[in-house]
Length: 104
Image (cartoon, rainbow, N blue to C red; front, side, top):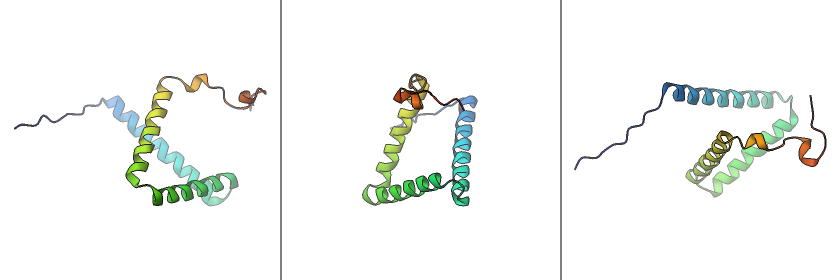
């Protein structure tokens, strides 16, 4: 019985977009780790250490597949929200508290 395999086709523009996004993500992670390693930003260092500790604790409780699936779901929701311009409708900064927004 022959099996019809699905073929995936993506455009050159989509492939370039995927690679650019991956490169930006890796670059951002690299810069965060550099700043954390040098100790210039103490708050960032504490956030990174807390996040790594939390992920290590989560990894002991939940299997890696479940964590990867949850991360994929959150990423898909993020991409959906970004594509529908939901982020443009949410006020950011002190405006949420009714105060003036920073201009600097």
